[in-house]
Amino acid sequence: MAAIDSTSTGSAPKHSITKEERKVIFASSLGTVFEWYDFYLYGSLAAIIAKHFFAGVNETTAFIFALLAFAAGFAVRPFGAIVFGRLGDMIGRKHTFLITIVIMGVSTAIVGLLPSYASIGVAAPIILITLRLLQGLALGGEYGGAATYVAEHAPKGRRGYFTSWIQTTATLGLFLSLLVILACRTALGTEAFEAWGWRIPFLLSILLLIVSVYIRLQLSESPVFQKMKAEGKASKAPLTESFARWDNLKIVIMALLGGTAGQAVVWYTGQFYALFFLLQMLKIDPQTANLLIAGSLLIGTPFFILFGSLSDRIGRKGIIMAGCIIAALTYFPIFKALTQYGNPDVFLAQEMNPVTVVADPDQCSFQFDPVGKAKFTSSCDLAKSVLAKRAIPYENVKAEPGTVAQIHIGDKVIQSFEGSAMPAADFKTQNDAFALTLTSALKEAGYPEKADPAKTNYPMVLLLLTILVIYVTMVYGPIAAWLVELFPARIRYTSMSLPYHIGNGWFGGFLPTVAFAMVAATGDIYYGLWYPIVIAVMTAVLGIFFMPETKDRDINHT
Image 1 (cartoon, helix red, strand yellow):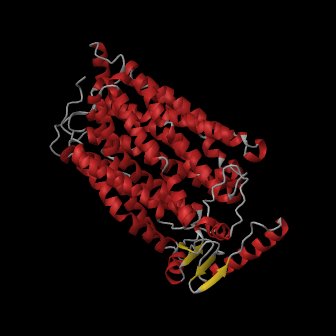
Image 2: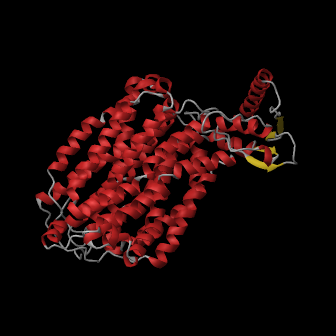
Image 3: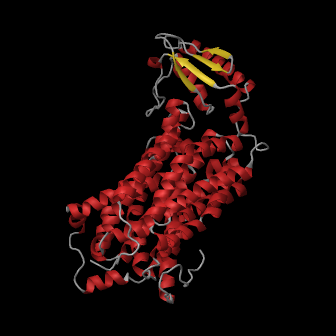
């Protein structure tokens, strides 16, 4: 991470940054990078983890389960915010850092040692999800402390700039995880990496944990907290003051709905859903997809600092709201362009030979099989199952009740079959023949099994991904300073942590799962984008009309 300079920006007062302040901000940011690295390894390896830990269910269900396990860590983040936020407001910001980093590092390393489903059965996914929950609890106590800690060290008029370094840590953590994964995959080869090499990035967390603990032991306590403690003004009941008193609770609610919810969905669409889209919908090679995402993050990361610094001059609110609005207006054309340039064969096939499933809706079920026992034998389910496995986009057309489903590929029609009453042997024979016929027809219509690397327009895909990351920097760069300035010092850690982690843990963390499920249910590879678009628009409306601008507030008040 680059050193933080001491020059003033805009109209902010000049301030000579001391060596101690520089160390505090750098050290807390670097430690947070490592914590995000641990947390994001799982998301980067979700497809491989699905094969190892959820092998007892069908392919679509396994991936949804893997995403749900990914989301489980986000689900408990608000609870971590409550537990560690209370500690941070009562005993200090510094001590929470040590607790959270140890929980995170140990939980991540154990994933690298965990036996797979093939070895210990259902115990494997249960333990995996438990570890994700521990990671989520730790992360729930991390961000609020880091943002509060850095903001309380920052000079007046520079809080947006200083806290924007903390904002880079999530992206840099993801970037680091992608680099380590790419290095291991390249060194070991795809086959070995997917068999056992994927464990190495998790095991590296032991080394990062040692470095992080050493770094955080060097930090001094926040001067604002020290002064507040010395004057006897620290809160004795931060949870009560934060959430049981309406004057503060209403700010917490609006910070969530009019701030962090929209910020979260823009963030996770730009960084995680974009990666899942490249891998699952466009069938781009995993190494290539990771490189493209890593490249976009490398190009886009400086914009966190740009927008954080800009928020010190023109305000936090306007930049965040603009990011939400622009993202909502452009997601559909950007993701359609990703298809056009990332897998042009699919894009052209959609244009020339669109796929339509004509079926009785009562015969169609959402093919999510949590226990691996369901049998999808209706003509509609059989048709959609083949299309889902190939990630073929299709439209649904309602047919008369009792009609056997048909798949229209351009002007070609393929009849499905009703397998509900068939003997098992006959069903398998006919299903294999049907799948072969449909796969052949799709190939003739131009639908590839995987993206052709020779046809992918890499500069355009990288440009589009970078635009998505820049949207992330607009909404995320100024958010820490905005949240810190909304709440008084005595309950700041608790009050800002909960809306942040509900927004990012629930609205953002569940985005890949919800969006992928929406795609699986409809067959429209773009349908999942409605989720972030609706949330971003809601945040923009509420934020514009009900949220205050805070850039000139004094954060020393208790």
